[in-house]
Image 1 (tube, rainbow, N blue to C red):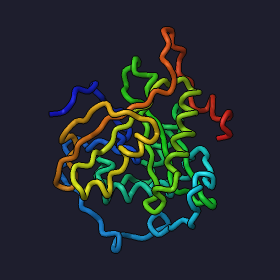
Image 2: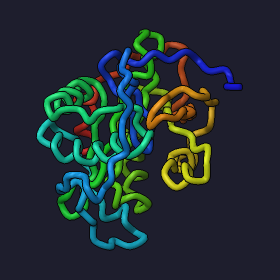
Image 3: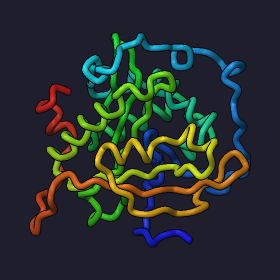
Image 4: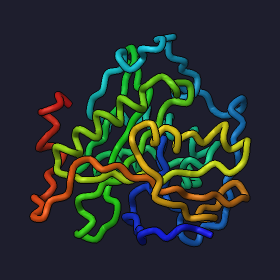
Length: 252
């Protein structure tokens, strides 16, 4: 039986996010089921065949973080497409079009950070934040997402992205971050869905789960909720400022 959780309503045109990556809600009324893509037969591009050089245990020190732009959309979409086609880390069924993905980046940057990580000048991951809920009283909470190139996990890149994003969100005035995560339920799942461990290592705590909340690949998945306090809430909260107001503090 699922634990009690606050009601969450995602924005209509934003991704419903399940991090170490993110996710989008299934389209209403959509009845076509996705098919797992064989990587050996899938179209190959820079996103699928790129293998970063061995940067050792101090990988985070080798990572450059900057703000994303619409021009990054092709590369970011290639990274994201792997998770859409092969996992339930995202609950999105179909890979978005490039135009749609560009629009998502543009909309996010109007208020929230959207960051990319680079190694040797190559984008290897990205993270972004968004509204936890559309009601104004939730305005000091941010929902977070991070996606890494499938060949660049476990190198400290996700940590550096999150650490930078948390500093930015704190400067903006957010008090808490929330992550929605696909929870592994089988031994096979545990080989794919590592995000709960990642978020625990980043200081997040488990709030609860919604069982059988997402249906993809002809099976049901469970969604975990995790949260992290960025700064203490105040009685008279100042308004949150946009990303554009603080990005200069972090040379983004």
